[in-house]
Length: 192
Image (tube, rainbow, N blue to C red; front, top):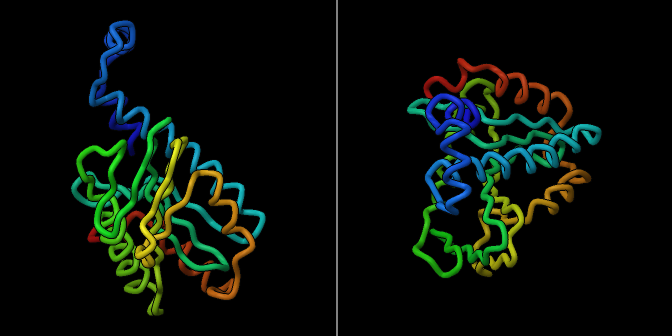
């Protein structure tokens, strides 16, 4: 979805070149950086397929919102939101995130909300009780400092998502397949 938005609405190659030459930051630069981060995390998640995990990327929800990544496997279901802040220091609090001591951003609250939406969809169509773990994954940050009281949202560096591979004991192979089948259908997300 992010790539489609950039292709449809973003600046053309000449405008991007001028912005780069003048060393200007644009809204579209942020979107492109986000796309790079999502692709890197997506590649890490796709590597887990050999261990029984299924990753879905850019799940479109109503109102032009998307889920960056949904990972379903033996260790459970994870709603993953990716943030790409190369060389920045990131502090993750219970309700917000700051980058280089800047203004608070609602990433922690947002990923919780996304996880609840995913949970409602999976439970509605599967008839099962499904726990969906919200997670924030940061790409190429210099420092990542989550508060000790943050227990309900997982916070990882990009390379740490590989640690999910050996997790087991939460979902059976049949449950994994059921949830993955549901998650792959666009109609399931139409009213999320």
